[in-house]
Figure 1 (cartoon, helix red, strand yellow):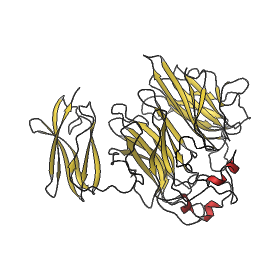
Figure 2: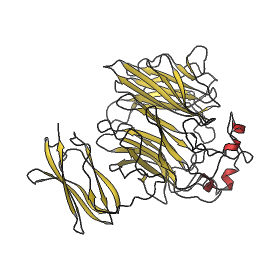
Figure 3: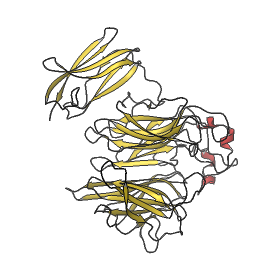
Figure 4: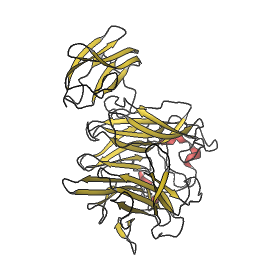
Length: 480
């Protein structure tokens, strides 16, 4: 299934207003030909050409969840289909009561800014929930949830920009513009968001209901942007902190009227491996300051970064640059939320011209698969991992079925081989055979041999060996 805003007209560099949203279905597997299933133009609130963004989610029960953002009416639409897109539920309007619509009200300082649509279904328990995570332009993060699959709605302000509830002593950090969310296997909601408005707290009240524009009310202070995680069970945790403070964007950016966010780390995406419980984060981070307004190229080249959590978002590994192209600009990464066999699938745009987060030519669309995203333990400043010894860790989970992670650390750059053997000493598969830098690394075994054939249950041995003579061996148990 594919959804797209349609009948739009260009408007600045956000993509244009549209008459509605169209849902398409591929006519046959691999055909790349699509038929239109549904046209979503249900009673526009603010008149024609009022839809700006759209969301499409298909949950584990096959229910289609469909959302759109009404930029003029400043609200979100929601509909669902339980018959593959043949018919849809009545539309719900998310923000305030509107005549003729199912509605969800939530208090907001200003316009909704960025959002993410999620769905959770547990048919055995009769649990069927839908949620929006929404950041408004007053820098508040809301969760608007329907406990009955879109019939009724309740809202909670998760992060309050006025009194900084939940931020502790780090009171200048606020939700910014982008967010993404998912339900884990137990129905707990997780939200990633960027925190990039760094306001002087003495000037905070003057910026509401709308944060200031222009040189008289600058956004930026000398603090580092970050990506953060929220869940009701865990609260807020840092996923990553940018190495550059927002003030590095320079005076030209700070005085730019109507500018966007301090875009050094932004647009986070979240994914989950339901078999292992591993949670994945991806985002865009810029690698340098271009030094003022050179056209629209003043935040440097973007790269896609990732981090991983093994404890439902409480702590995260150090950020890893998974594209690592200092002279190529990647941004706006999207990540498949369902992580299978430890492989993370990313799509992003890019070209060789540095640019502003909302613009730039971005002439290419790229697909990137990350197979070794686990880096090392959490560090506040996300500095480079340093390993002081050669070490092979016990795999996790163990026992496992069918995927497990193997961490190891190297004190210096060397050639490394990581090999799986059966209990008879016969080689099953070589996971790693290459030169690797010092630091902490990870490999993933999906329970297959060199030919991609699944192996049987039993005890297996994995051996780490380096060119300079270090060797360590451990055992693991595959249980099917």
